[in-house]
Image 1 (cartoon, rainbow, N blue to C red):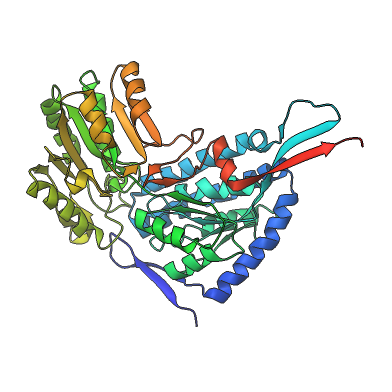
Image 2 (image 1 turned 180 degrees about the vertical axis):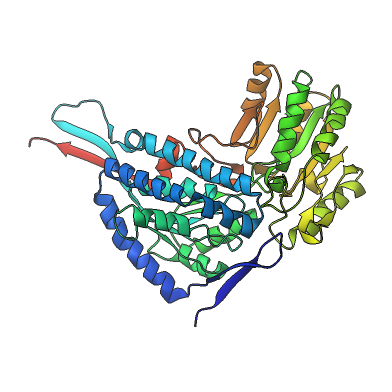
Length: 462
């Protein structure tokens, strides 16, 4: 009799779903099937894999509303935002398909008499994808589709908070008519996932999650000569320069902090505002934050859903309390609450005059908190933005491209934005520095970690 994993609906607090926890024998069968599938996929041309992925996308889209509903009931995202996640998944999927043949083509070296020299990009074998719960489709597609296009079989082990999120990919590829078990979905506990990482049948691991989770995955792979891809979150800063378009900047920065209830690795978590516009920026933020509507995520009027994890509202309160104790002022929100007696919510918070040593400016809070701090100039903003162990994204809000360029050269982050935030373009590499992880997903560079180079060195006549 299998053990079940059950999670609650963050709004109703009733059971949302229950899935079996695969034991080591079941996981082993999945990995054996993946190895057999990998051999078939490797024999396919890139064009054939692109066609297979295209058919799978059609199958996934046919399931779009059910997939969005599952996201909402397992992690609390407003249904319209969950539908948006399905659309974003399609965008990334199509982009990686569109660049696959060119990106995976052999690199042909300049002619050399009597020799043919090429660098072939060969599949790794089996890729284990460990996506996060906050964007369960988007963090999965970053690995699933590029890995398949590169000639690998994929095994998805979903997060415990979103255990249904791997199945849509497995179903879609099964319906697409390619090699059997090209993409599989298996759910197991943390210890089981770590054993999968250590298993010799797995050739590559892509993990999206916390810094703590990244350390555990890396430790599980310590006896393997395998590069583990780690996308580990952020404490992402924004700098509001004196020449910014203030109204547009406020709207974008607040949305960047509050979207998905702030449960995003690239959400704006700390805002450094030039002293000359500080008071106006703070004043303009308050009504925008107050306009968020908490409630049933299935209701179209709801713009902020509940907090996904049961323990997290208390942690968010502690972040705000720590800042206040260190000299900050709480101007709005900052309390755990329910709406109509239902759900676990956190009132969207605005915390100002936050000192650099506060946890809000040093650690990932992962909630709807706008932490604002005053700076005297660009140099102070730059120093304080870099003063952090995390380095995923940073944004500069200015009308001066040269200012943004100058700061981008020194900002220690995987992505630097000008006049936007909390966004991902699949044509650009997604990566972090420092404790935000290592490795690259998406873009043409995303295929590099999913293939190995093979030198083709032929002397034509002897």
